[in-house]
Image: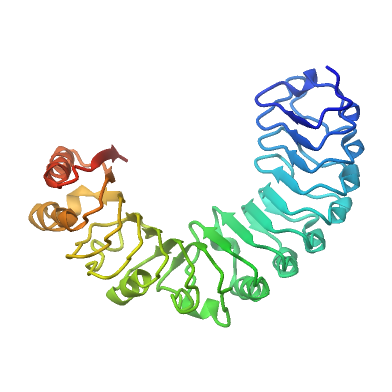
Length: 372
């Protein structure tokens, strides 16, 4: 292969040892090696990476890499770096020299060594960070990334956040006033209360928000008066009250709404009724529990999803006929998906009832039922 003038090189699910040396790609702008393996010794060493001085995009997702070479700092023009699902757990000192980096995807078990360099990436606009534990210095560095427009923080164990760290996180988020997409997903976390968000004022241009932490109430800053441009909301709450439903239904541009409770439907059997004139533009709604749609509710809704319905807790007369029967008030409905928790005594009954309601709807929406 003649590689001297090659601008873009993408390989997927290959043995990287059949590749030419990186030093031969003199003019390369894009290097993507997603899902590639190293059959020889199990670890791929990025030798000569620093010679790719024109590189703009470097994709190493799902690669068997345990560290980045120090010479990565030579990539002065690098704009996108994808390190998701690699074995890298620390960053070299030269990482802070990537001053033109705009997009960083990083999945690690521990955010520890090298995270003090994050604040040097002053051009960063998109950050996706998946981690198990993190260091306090990371929270402080986050507040220096004032150009961020898209921030997603994900952890399977939110218990790493103590009260002081939560306050520090909010303090850093206040400084990020260009954010348009914000995702904070701390699954299996400790409860985050209203007081933890004290002092936080969201950027008015926020369009997408995913706040999947265990929260007792809807945070006060999630309000159409503060973030009127929101088109997508994903929230995990222990309880949704009628007032919360009114607030959520008042977002003028909301298209997608995903609601969940951490117990997958255990903590609340029902949600408040959805009344008319709310959710004027909503097209997709995901809920952990049945609810009743009144006349005029969700006039634009096309797709409805129920997650983790517990059939043995549903009273047939009230739910299958009363709640699910209110689909007839959803005049734009085209698709329904329901995931049911296994219950041999009522499982078939639930499926038959859902099919009956779907067939009676004027639009005959496409129905998918999964047993979880």
